[in-house]
Every structure is written in C-alpha cells, then in structure tokens.
Image (cartoon, rainbow over all chains, first blue to last red):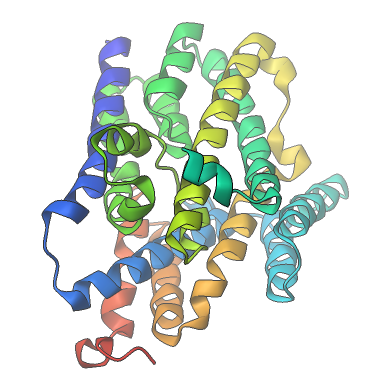
Length: 102
Length: 227
C-alpha cells in the first residue's frame, strides 16, 4: 500500500511537470496567450509566497514569520543582495521566536 | 553543458546555494517527521528521490499517518498541479532536446522556476533553472537521509526561522517582474485571492485560484501593447 502511494504520487507529479514542459512545444499558442505565461508564473509564485508567509496549515500564521518575510521584502525592495534578504528574513523570525513571539 | 558552464556566474551559484541550503534543512525535518509518524526509512528516502516536492511530501506523510492513502495521493497531486503552468512558463529554460525535457522536468520545483523567471537572457535562464533545480535535488536528498538518521535529534527548522526564508526568497526573485504594471496587478490580486481562500479550500487549490488574478488584471485588448 505504502509503495503504491509513493509511486502514484511520484508518477502523477512527474507527469504534471513533464506535461507542462512538453505542451509548450506542442501547442501553438496565440501570441496573447504566450505573453500571459510568464505573468501566470509570477502570479503563482507570489501566491505561493503570500500563503507561505501568512498562513500555516490553513490558518493565520503567527507574527514571527510574516515579520521576517516583511524585513526580507523591504531589503529586496532596497535592492539588497539575495543572500542578505534570505538570511535577514530567517534571522528576524528566529530572533522573534527566541523572544517568545509566536 | 559547456554553454551552461560559461553562463554561470558566482553570484548565481551563491544565491542558489543559499536557498538550497535552507531547503536541505527542511529536507532534514522531512526525514525526521516521516520517521516520527511511523514511515520506514526507505519510504521517506524514496519519496524525496521520486516525488521531489516538499509540500506534497509533508502533506502525504500527514495524511498517511491519519490512515488515508487515497487522500494522500489526491491531496499531493492537487498541491502539485501548479507545476503544469510552471512547466509551460519555463519550458524554454528546460531545453528542447528529449533528454533535457525528461531529466529537467523532474527538477521542476518552485525555486528553480523563480530563479529562471528572474533572468531574461535565454542562456542565463537555462543556467539558473538547471543550477537551482539540481542543487535543490542534491541537498533535499542529503537532508532527508540525515533527518532519517537523526530522527527527533534533527530539531525544528522553525527555530532557525527557515520557514521565512522560502517566501522571502520567492518575493525577492519575483520583485523585478513586478515592475511591469499588468504583472503586478495580476500578482497582487492573485496573492490576495490565494490568502483569503486558504482557510476554506484544500491546500493547492487557493494557489491555482490565484490565476484568476490574471483575468481581473489583464484586459485582452491591452495585452498586445505592453505598458
């Protein structure tokens, strides 16, 4: 049973990934739709980031994580290097948790 | 491959490694949690190698330990449905050869997409995708094996604030694309839709609903002339 779950999940996930990559070549998309693809990807990435920053298991996350992400976002906006953004976000969240902030 | 080597700059390697290291530590907690919820070691490792999708793996372990194998597969696949539009958006970065498509598709994770989307020049997009994808793959496996071995001694990545690293990294990588007005409006509307619907819908669906942001923000007539 366990092995079936793993194999089905793996095959389904791989098929989804491969389908996206292969479809791009197979489909002749109208130019308007082609321009929409990168916008769709960015929209999905921002939605992922927003839900990961603000929610936890379907509920509102505590304060420490959103605060850390906000610090990272501000640094990125001020064109700080990527490494600084990521480390500052994690450090802010870690320090807040150390201080007892949920 | 030689073309990729030439276009890899040290800054990209450093940035991709930063995210891959954070992902590796989360892989460590995946291994530990899988063992703690009763999964055998081989299953945790097989999942990381064959599925290679963090969110779906954590979810599958949770739903499996609740005793519902069918739901584990369905919930994981729903969570991974976003990889279809992602694949279409980064197909050029994956490559056009059969081998590149078959191997590269397995490396399609959010972070590789984000790094590829942050580059505009084709060779750099390719390098960013492959470098990020393969670094994440390697560190995710190392993390999982270490987590399986360490068990409860692995600790909680939340203490290190690593749960803030993923969203902060994604936002930093998408920020340049958000300078385009239509993209910004679509992403903000989509992000709001996803956050607001998250408490009411199964995981994965809110992310897909974010695509409605495109419908709200983009007028078909304006699509022809970028503004």
